[in-house]
Image 1 (cartoon, rainbow, N blue to C red):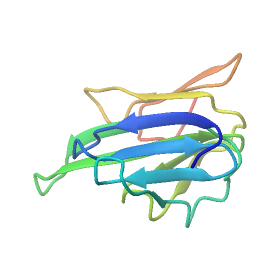
Image 2 (tube, rainbow, N blue to C red):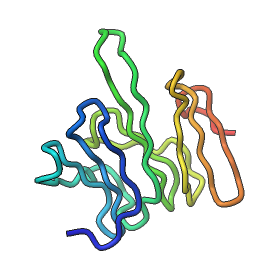
Image 3 (spheres, rainbow, N blue to C red):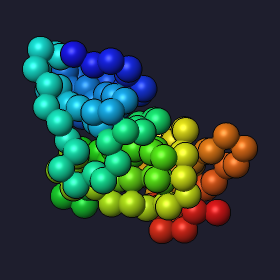
Image 4 (cartoon, rainbow, N blue to C red):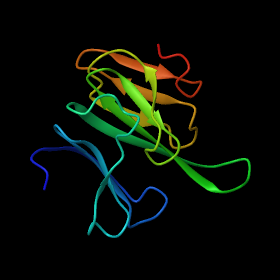
Length: 128
């Protein structure tokens, strides 16, 4: 199905869920133990270069378990808070090859290019 798998994330909120970043096809999601796949690229302008995926798990103000998914691309760092329905560009530096979120603080995000490292402590508002 996929020619070149660039990144994957397992078990976000539900163990049977997986997201994969695929060359020339963007980000795909499976919610049934990987039997069926669907695209979550509707609002993501970059399909060719999904270099990495990252996630943050946390409890919302309503006390429900939530997650944010991050995609490092050739255009910058994107985030979705609704499972890939909508995406927001939060850092417009090109070629983000790695992204991590502090497991104890969803507001602290780390992003890396080949020779540069960035950190935000305000949920991606300012990367420096």
